[in-house]
Length: 159
Image 1 (spheres, rainbow, N blue to C red):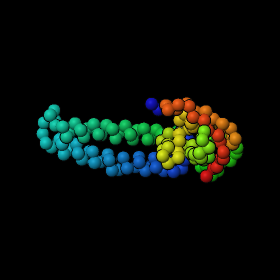
Image 2: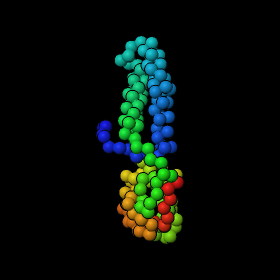
Image 3: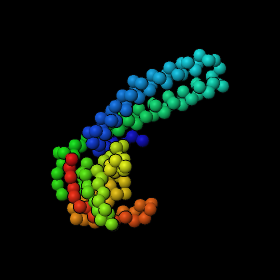
Image 4: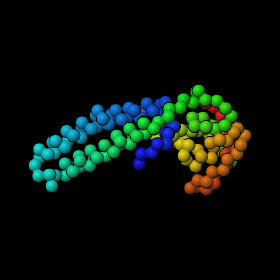
């Protein structure tokens, strides 16, 4: 599970990850401990569904905490406003034209921050991998579940 590979992340994603970890440790963990104590008070644990559900939830919370701590330890915070250049890199905002010359804008982010509806795609996604290292004016072909898509890189911003 844990690797030594750096995890690029934007400052906003890093802050969100830290806030989620803090909530898990200070709110969710104590709540589930309280739920376990209350369920224990009901008696026989072998047939106590509330106890088993609370213990399962506790395991999920602990796994989330371990995963977030690992990701934060490997996080490499990259501020796109400090970047420049003519190649698509992590943090860049890319203006694309699709096959019908319809404009599409995506920011290249980490897997944790990805949300295509918000215009944020992971550098590990098929489109993200196809764009990394490309320049303005280049065309990219992406194989997606709905078929091959073609895009032209129209503009590159570091915002």
